[in-house]
Every structure is written in C-alpha cells, then in structure tokens.
Image: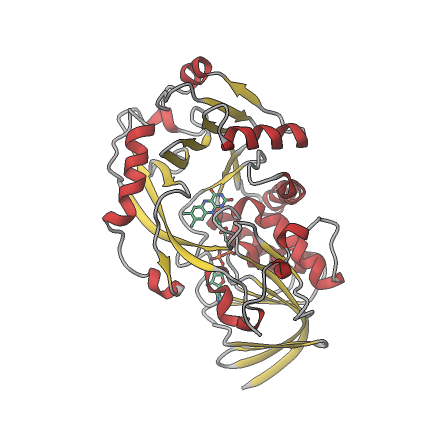
Length: 384
Ligand SMILES: Cc1cc2nc3c(=O)[nH]c(=O)nc-3n(C[C@H](O)[C@H](O)[C@H](O)COP(=O)(O)OP(=O)(O)OC[C@H]3O[C@@H](n4cnc5c(N)ncnc54)[C@H](O)[C@@H]3O)c2cc1C
C-alpha cells in the first residue's frame, strides 16, 4: 500500500454533494482528491433517474433560503462553465387546501424571501392546469422560477470541471476507513492511503458506515422513481406542466414533467409507507407491488387523464434524519471532518450550494451561510 502526498481536501463520495464539493474546491484553487466507490453518475445511490425538482418556495422552512439562493447562482455557473443546460425552467406548483400546511408554509416562505409567486384560486388552477384533478377547493402556489434539474448531467459536468481544474478523481474505489485527529485525516482504500488537511464526507445512504463514532441517528429509506403516461403526451411537457408537490389529505405526492420522453415522473409523498433498510446494499431487489401501490394510487386520484399503471420504475433511496433537516457542518468531536449527509429526500436542489459551503468549511473552518439548523451536533448523543 502506498501513501501519497497530502491534499488540502479529500472528498469521499462523488454523488450529488461530493461532485459539487470537488468542483468548487478545485475551481477555488485547493488541491483535491475525490473518491467514489462506483462509477461516474451511477444509479445505485440517491442521485439518478434523469430529473429533480428545483424550487425556492421551500415549505421546509426559510432557513433553507440562503443555501438555495447560493445553489441557484452556482447551477447557472455550472451551466455556463460546462456549456450545458442543467436547469430547465418549468415553473412549480404546490397544490392543497388553503389552510393546509403545504400552502401555508409555501406562502410564508415565498413572502418572507420575496420569491415571485401567485396564488391560484380553484377555478384558475383548473383552467390553467386541467391535467390535475380538482379536489375539494384546493388552491395552488405557483412559482414561475421553479424547474427541473438534470442530476446525472450535473454530476458529470461538475466532475469534468473538477478534473480539468486539477482534482484527482478515483472511481470504483471504496474508502474503507477514515482516521482523523486535530492535524488532518488519513483515508484508506484497498491500494492506497491518502492524507488531507480535511475530508468532506458526502457518502449519502452509506453515511454512518465510515464515521460510526459520530453516532448520527440516520436511517435509510427505499424510495421509488416511477413514470406515467397518457394519450396527450404534449400536455405534460415542461412548457405546459410545472413541477409539483401535492398534499390533499391522503392524495399526497410530487412530480416532474416529461423532460426526456419517458413520461411524467412521480413519487408518493412522505405519508406513504416506504421500507426502511438496514443498509443500502439491501436496496438491491426489483420493484414490487409494495413500491408501486402508493404512487399508482396517487396517480389515479390526482391525474384523471394519465394511466395509473407506471410505465417504468426504478428503486432509489434516501438517508433520513429524525427531523428531516440536513446534516452540514464540522462536528465538535472531529474538527478535521466536514459532514454533508442526511438530505432526507429534498437535497438535490441545494447540492451546488452545499458543495460550495462544505469547501468554505474545509478551507476556513467557517462559512457565511447560516448552518445552525443543520448542525451535526444537534442530536442527543446515542453512543460514546
Ligand atoms: C426518489 C427520490 C426523488 C427525489 N427527488 C428530489 C427532488 O425532486 N428534488 C430534490 O431537491 N431532491 C430530491 N431527492 C433527494 C436528492 O436526490 C438527494 O438528497 C441527493 O441526491 C443526495 O445526494 P448525496 O450526495 O447525499 O447522495 P449520493 O448522490 O447517493 O452520493 C453518495 C455517494 O457516496 C458514495 N459512497 C458511499 N460510501 C462510499 C465509500 N465508502 N467510498 C467511496 N464512495 C462512497 C456512493 O457510491 C455515492 O455515489 C430525491 C431523492 C429520491 C430518492
């Protein structure tokens, strides 16, 4: 086994967050190594399937606004630097009862943050977007600036740019151990030990494998990507059909227009029962009725003109925190590690911002973007 030179930053995991961190670190002049257990933009983690919702009406809370603003600017930088379109504007809808949590929280966020939005009354919603079922007196918050991100395209673009800026990127290489003390980190793979001043740990659903001593209460949940079609396919293209989240009592789900000819991509919302996994390796089994039932029920209730049988489906998974908020920061117990995990099913839109923030933390130990809500130290300690 060889020990190579010391890098400024080692990025472990080159999925959404790690790819963006590697790009930002290399572009900002740091010496970087990035290590990924699988291939470039692979389909075995949380960042595959051709599309992700981007929106700023963050019903998750206004604490996320600085991060998503930083992300939006950087998505545009990434598009410009790679000469690719990664964020397709489609507009976005939050649909539900006027007094329901989704609409109240989306409006609160949009007003607080000054995001352009329009409240669509039931008749306007039905007239503009007849694709959606009218349920009771549901209203919608429409955000013209929302759209669809290309996850595989974004990861590929970021890593190409990182490589071009001098980052050393290793694929099909699993990190087997991370040793850290106040002076730095040593990262072991099967054939090499690598030293760095700090490591950014961005290992998604595998998060607790490598740093068990930090004892984060993360759990892995299987989640489905599924596609639906109907006779009028043009009605579901991005210029006529915005990304959406719907919470109408039991009719609870999200969806993305047909950006690639595969159909409308949909998923059941958080209320649906989804299997918890002991480990990400347990996600390696074919899609079954337990996966499809909730999303097909959602499609049947929410889209009268689509066939409620999925035309295709793929498993995915999420690393979830107990409170649904991200984990971003330097833990008190490990000052040379920067953690970026627990994205709980809503992280992709923030990835470019998260990558840049983790590089601030790795280089300077601090960042201007407020992170209190995302502290790795906010959970009661369960070990040690
Ligand atoms: C079905 C579904 C739909 C979603 N829709 C949206 C959406 O519309 N909008 C949105 O904003 N978010 C969405 N999300 C959430 C978003 O996709 C995730 O939050 C985000 O992709 C997580 O990125 P990550 O970098 O943490 O994980 P990943 O992209 O999985 O990256 C982790 C990487 O670490 C690597 N790794 C792990 N262990 C090791 C090791 N020991 N050595 C080397 N490499 C290692 C893995 O192979 C992997 O490549 C969705 C998620 C799912 C599952």
